Length: 211
Image 1: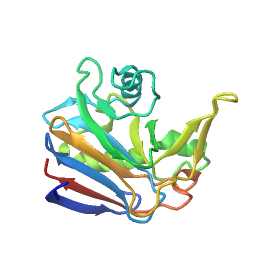
Image 2: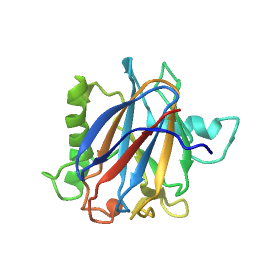
Image 3: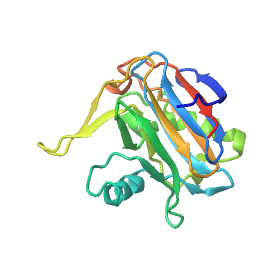
Image 4: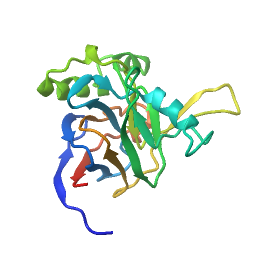
C-alpha cells in the first residue's frame, strides 16, 4: 500500500486529555508507545455537537449489521445517537481486538474503587472540551470507546464484568477512518487503581493520515 502522508502526530501525556479534528476521509491511529494503556475516546460531529457517538448503540447496531450478522458486540462501525444514527467512523485496523463500549472512569467509579479524589477520564474530557466550548453535562451518553481495554463479561458465571490488564504492547495500534468531519476527544486513562492500565498510567500517541 502506498505510504500515506502523516498530517499531524502528537503524544498525549499520561493522565491527560486532548480534543482534535479529523476530517471526512482522513484516518487516525491510537498508538501504544509504552504498552498496556487504555485510551478512552468520545466523538462529535464537528459541525453539530448535538450529534454524538453512542457506544452501546453502536455495539447493538454492529451485532445486527448485515455484513456481520450476529457476530459479536465488538464494534467495527461507530454510530451517532438517535435520532441521527449516522456512521461516524469505522475501525479499519484492530489487530489486538480489544476494546470496551462502556463507561470510562468517572468520579463515581473512582469512589467505588476507594479513591474518591482520584483523577478520572471525565476530568480529562472536561479539560479537553473547554477549547471547543463544550460542557461535559451536554454530552448525551457518558459511555466511550475504550481502546485497548481488556474487559469482558463472564458468560459462564453470574454475568460479572471482568477487568484485566491490556494485552497491547509497545507499537500496537488501532486505526479509525472518519466518515464525516469528527471532533475526537481522547483521554489517556488515569486509573492506576484497577488492572485496566496494568496499575501504571502511561502516555499515548496519535497520528492523523490523509485519506
